[in-house]
Figure 1 (cartoon, rainbow, N blue to C red):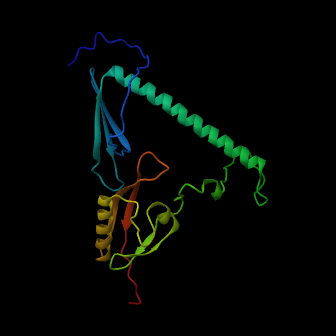
Figure 2 (figure 1 turned 90 degrees about the vertical axis):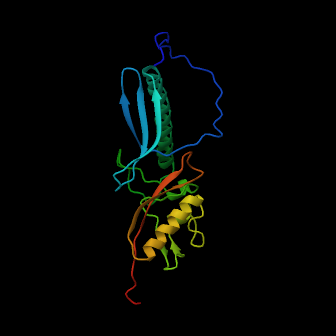
Figure 3 (figure 1 turned 180 degrees about the vertical axis):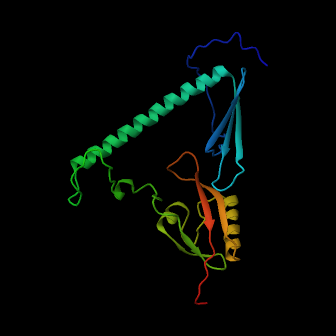
Length: 213
């Protein structure tokens, strides 16, 4: 192992140039950490509900000294996120106070804030609704609800915003369902202008039989 005895605990900022243009990103929703006296091993993994086997997306090994720097950097960034969130909440509260809706109930202290849908017209809203679509036996989409359209595509191109690999995965899953199979836990990633990282979407396809046929 390298000799770290001569390294200092200084937390001075380091000036460097980093080209992130060719960097490959991987979505992970959990991290497992192992450590010894000489190193920390961070395994970034992706877990899918209902699937026991997790996917290892990246493994990072750092010294204890750099692990401390990582913690400090995360804390600084989390403070920035919390500050932005608080400012956004204060702005929303102020807007709600300045222009109350005539149909809104009297204020009730610290109760939940109801947001008008027009506030976020540019951001697709998928909750509390599910992304729902209906497909014919030939695999063609015949209906897509509004959340589906806002993220994935319209009925004529239901997978318009997916990569080619994810399109193949989704189309294959639909054809399995058309043959009568229950298809669950098909994970795809959607690029959106509102997030730096792709948005993960978990598909379930359920065969539905028309009793009139």
